[in-house]
Image 1 (tube, helix red, strand yellow):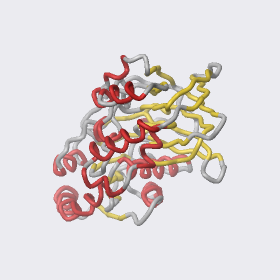
Image 2 (tube, rainbow, N blue to C red):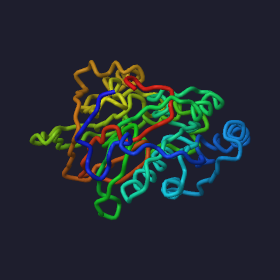
Image 3 (cartoon, rainbow, N blue to C red):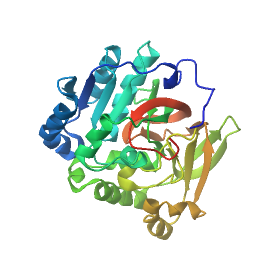
Image 4 (cartoon, rainbow, N blue to C red):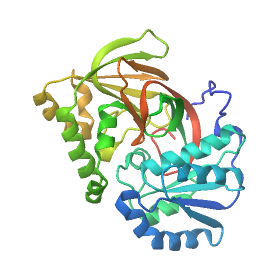
Length: 333
């Protein structure tokens, strides 16, 4: 694992503050995966009791923002491990709650994940096992990974500048359109089919827009693009590998620029997004960065980890070694 020294002053690497032992707090989003998380709850409770006895607490979300609030509260207590039960959106909120609490003086907490959502991007990037028991076993395993996180500053719907952490990926343009168009009912058919059909419909009709992109402080370059995908991990959107070479712990973000293309090319290249072989096409351009700025003449939508955030202009940066996760492995951990 490489060591990075340019971590921002408001967020030291987790290795500088060892996780304190304490009880486990579990945050469940029962609606994740079209209700799959709620259906798994009896088995989840039994599995948690087998592994932790009475040394865990559980709370359930009731709406957007609850997971972040519950995670921040857990970080302020003597909790050693906070477990997110749900999909990428649930993990996204929990991470923002934990990191927000840390910035305000809270302690470093480990993150555990029980994946039962639709998209499955982070679960794929972390190589999490599919079975519930196997995922619960990781919560008591000595295996740890320390991952990088992304940080995005953007303009929200009311015009205010705000910021958010992200774990897997950030999307500008077409990717956000797909996330916004994904119908809750479609999630019943699984992430690959739900995201695949929604993405295909969006790809066919989406128009390119002029985006000005500056990387690592270099002068901005304006191009006509369908969108940008900024990957911290290499899996997103129901199994797509938009940034197939991205790694959660390599100290860089992988940027995929999606150029405008005619309809036949869009149809021909779409299946290759799942294999990651699209990056060999001249219709795509990739590079690696630590800092990125994006602007447009008209606001372009921004999302992260499948969550709709707001609009451009936005700035994105990488914070290396920002979070300790109880997971099997990532590429270099």
